[in-house]
Length: 84
Image 1 (tube, rainbow, N blue to C red):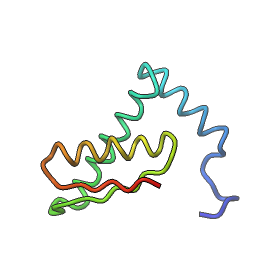
Image 2 (tube, helix red, strand yellow):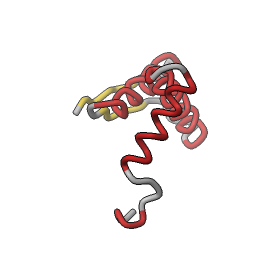
Image 3 (tube, rainbow, N blue to C red):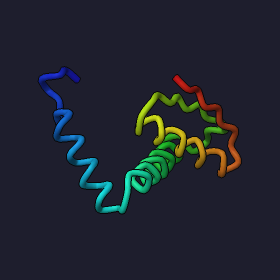
């Protein structure tokens, strides 16, 4: 997506995330929901996948990735986390 075609600008996205975190109680609850949602989406798209690799950068998005990896591990599937 080209920058001039973005759906949200950075300030609007941060404000949206802050409102969602307040509605859920805190930032960690929002991250938990993101990790769980990503896991469900992966299962729906690739139900036969036997293992996962999750690449995690810094910040909250990286935290979402670690929580996604935790869901994969709890399912009994091997998971590898790559930290950037």
